[in-house]
Image 1 (cartoon, one colour):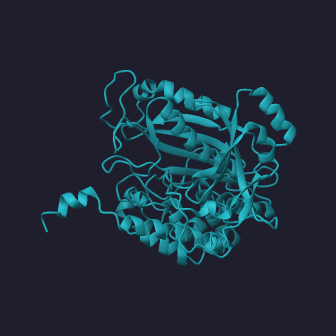
Image 2 (cartoon, one colour):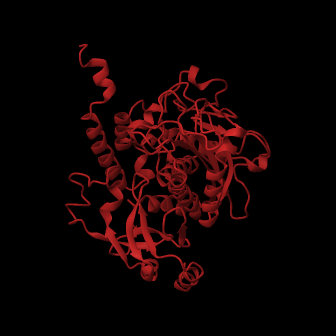
Image 3 (cartoon, helix red, strand yellow):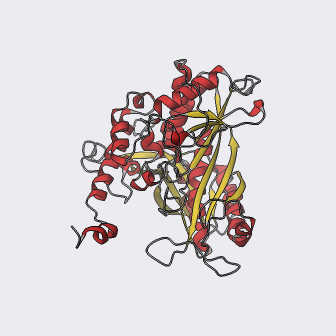
Length: 449
């Protein structure tokens, strides 16, 4: 976004008083600074600096103990470079503001590959070197909740005033009851250039899914997903709700997923997954094989939190085994039907709580390994994947951390420093959870054992 464009944009938005200069950390949380609007040009020109360690703080925003970024470097600053996206209006707060999307560069000018957006860009550049462009679409599920208590509860309908108490999958009534909220979400998406498509009422009470249209720029697709999550939470607060992208906010209701669809275009705009038939091309099959080969090792990027593993359970409408199939939603990798011209891969493992940059890096990076090495997948499964003996995804958070730390394919996708930082971040979070005794444990054990 050239400086003159910034000036023109601000002239057309004279009510903007401040700009939030933001980078994304490993947990998918936007962190940064609020600056007066008269410093917007400075933000766009790379005049904002932040510690490189800001991308690797834990979920509570605390530094990682003994992190090399903090102590070995003296917690040195990096340069916050503008990503090129237009300033983004924030319309759901009391006073209008704007947001600038940034990513990190080291003092010597080289990209900081532990910035999750930089990690994705490195994989995209490898595709470009092969003359390939990934086309990506995402599907994000979330719950609206009543924010009045310490624990989430289904919201009250704005129409009837009654609390939702049933699973209204594809319910038109539920969509219409929350029409004002959804209208504001779509308006905010339009303001920020996010290509929001269909909205549906999902399996859980107060659960919705909004699809984002495919784009031939994976960085934009990941940006859109990060921005979408933030604006949904903001618009929900404006309407008196809370919105959560937790993978499993309710133990007895459906979890929230983050499904990714992608295909590949060659330099002539041809879909290289299309072979004119239903089975897909050899390139597609190699991409599937790479996804299967890296899925266990990269599970930490798809399920990065303690709560994530409550979703990845048999029969919970989320994949648990390493498998693929045609038109099979019980498999981790699904090849959708329809016209062969739109042949694509759907990756169904990630929860809505995952960092979109890391998710797309894992998916596109795994697929690229399969293509580069001419891998061949096992036979596609048919029927219920939950009833078949399949190689299992990590069953718990600790196993996923270990798999990412030791995975032989992880360094083929991520920088060694990002691999180390994510492992250290998640290990620190795990230790803190391990020291926390829950109310349910007290209820179960306190005066019984």
